Image (cartoon, rainbow, N blue to C red; front, side, top):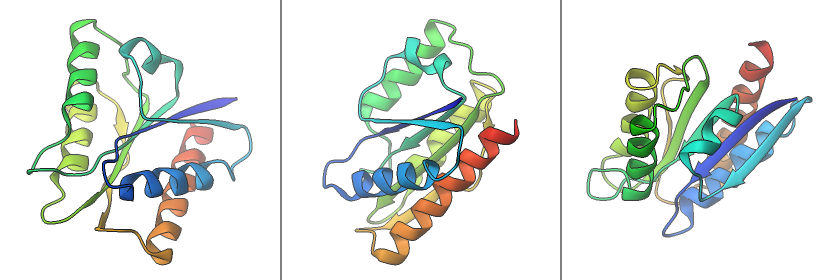
Length: 146
């Protein structure tokens, strides 16, 4: 059984809505187990075949919690090489955070990232939530293929 971690942060609820829809899409693929959470430790990360981070952009940056998670994982030499990485998030003005997450996944941890990240401005509407479900399904299918 392939395992996908969907880790997200959401202050306004927009990224949480996206995370829930991404998880729904991933769960449509057989032989995939999905864990949807807003809290993870570096030691948990190697237990998953794919790590998907939902990150809104605040002040042109990602949140400190996810930054800290990646920094601790790097210090502890957590091996994520070859795992699938993906990112998504809502934004108001700029949308850099999911791109920053992918950059760290690809360059620091040598993960196989799915690009580009899924970005939705402000609150996801039904069409946006459907894009999220499609994104989740795409990630799950890629996990099964590897």
